[in-house]
Image (cartoon, rainbow, N blue to C red):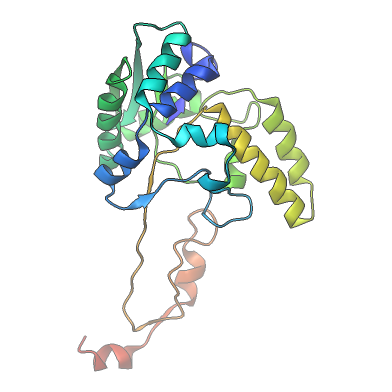
Length: 251
């Protein structure tokens, strides 16, 4: 969920943080996905550059603690004592995004925010993300590896959907990108992830668990879902069908 950080009310980091504190991520996960993960980063859990919520500093961990009363007070302190109106663009073709958006309308109403949804077809929705021409917020389904995300958050990157200008992230990314030592590089990326979470330029929505299953006669396949940015070809070129086992099982 991307805020418009280049102009308008959401250039205020305190206001963005109030919105995240006023978002019940657990309720969204349970309602939309039944089971899923709430993550403190944009990469896979357990990766060296991805902190868990438990590892976060107290001030950052607070963002993951649903507290509508605190959120409402923070909104008032940000010069909106009576709340405010906002819009959010969503992709009408993605059912989970539509459900997520409906829950945000309800949740944010409790903290004095009147959210109006602008439903768009996929091409227009993607275009407005790339041009950053949305007014207040843009909802998208995105689960990118940490390094790619931090790359996207550098200054003037074409894929930065929020328009946030953050020199700390920019300099840190290019410093880490030149490091050969994995541990040192991951330490910088981990710090950048925490810093980026603090900016609240985006609210990472809960991620559903992805289950992978295949017939026993499919050999040399071990449940991979991609081999680098949605690339399926390496798995497809190496798996094979055990026709004897398939026949033995009655197929």
